[in-house]
Amino acid sequence: MSTAIPFSPSEGQALDAYSQTIVRIAEVLAPSVANIQVLSRRQDGREFSAGAGSGIVLTHDGFLLTSAHVVTSARGRVRERGLASFTDGRELPFRVAGADPLSDLAVLRCDDGGLSAARLGEAAHLRVGQLVVAIGNPHGFAGSVTAGVVSALGRSLPARASGVVRRIDDVIQTDAALNPGNSGGALANHAGEVVGVNTAVAGIGLGLAVPINEATRRIIGALMSDGRVRRGYLGIAAEARPLPQQARETYGASSCLGVVEVVPDAPADAAGIRTGDLIVAVDDRPTAQVTDLQDLLQGDVAGTQMPVVLLRDGLERRLLVQPVDLESRR
Image 1 (spheres, helix red, strand yellow):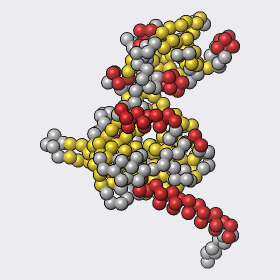
Image 2 (image 1 turned 90 degrees about the horizontal axis):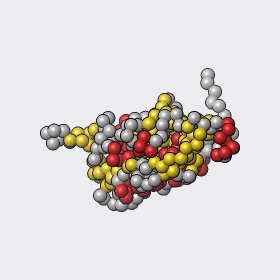
Image 3 (image 1 turned 45 degrees about the vertical axis):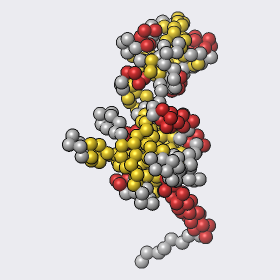
Image 4 (image 1 turned 60 degrees about the vertical axis):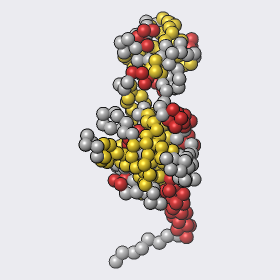
């Protein structure tokens, strides 16, 4: 005969408090998470469903946030329209205001207002082991809620667009169950603030979310206002490498960027950067990691002259490179 395992009042209270936290988050945030159906058109003019995912309401007047891959075809073409369904039964048409595959973020625009906007939090405040709740539409099951913890912070994801490979940094790893259709949905903290955009399932109990932080806020703002994210392009592939011992004292750094490839006729090639060069600084700022260079190329930097300090065969060289707009290469 089985015997029930007794719970002390304090254990029962703790479990109840845990449940109440999740219930509260779900009640607050579920109206702000939409079921996204992406539409495409056949040659005969008829529309069909070309993909699905989740979206987060950013503003009361109709801006939504989702994952770029939700609205992008396998060939990299952004699908322009679709339908957003909400827990109150409304189904609203949307158009894609802008998508950025290099951050895996996209902004949608519904014409109707009166939406329930989610509050955005700050992923930098998360700690490993902290409670998080995922809300989305896995396999089309709208308003699904799963809970877990922050399993790890500082993960990275590769992203590619127009032949350019970039890392999405500070990705959140969670064991909250994520499945196809969760992409673009909310990962929330205990206060019901969105701290991440669910983006990938890397295995059982291993979900990943793009963080909401200062960098992603800038990207979201650019997509809302301009429909695109401006980035400069140099035409190099680089990786972090240790700075030679004799140069560490000179530059006050221990690492740099080693150039592993230079695209012919790209700005870096025109400036005289070569494979094997060690880039110490760009635009008077140290480049110890690939992300340092990515940050420098963020924004409207095309056409500006950027000084580059590099080492070649142990000798310092100073060059000027002029980035072009990444979009101009598409």
